[in-house]
Image (cartoon, rainbow, N blue to C red; front, side):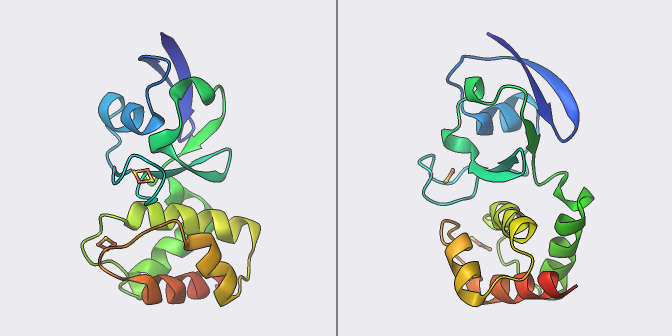
Length: 151
Ligand code: FES
Ligand code: FES
């Protein structure tokens, strides 16, 4: 089926099955490989993108549920005020180790700070609890979110 989806401010026409996960449309059809596959079951957060500004797991989001919503991926989050602050803080705090989970971490952090400009540690931990990091960068993620919130 043909869908017209809006990704990072641009319309894209894609021809895929109705139940194709958004993740695979982004990666395989549109070539936006910044969004990662981890579990495919909404358990790890690696595939997190925004739909109308809200963080969702693209691995379990069928393309036919997206409609005309604005999809934002890691490729464009730096163009937002909050996203730019977060990316700077991530670099300043040297958060990244292998990097595999970090697109999803940043997308979840951007959703958090867009709705809660000054989160407590508990609120950060709660908002980020669905994003798993096998390298254990959690402490630096928390510090980077606090830095981004303070700037
Ligand atoms: S790949 Fe989507 S939550 Fe793990
Ligand atoms: S930085 Fe390696 S999985 Fe998070």
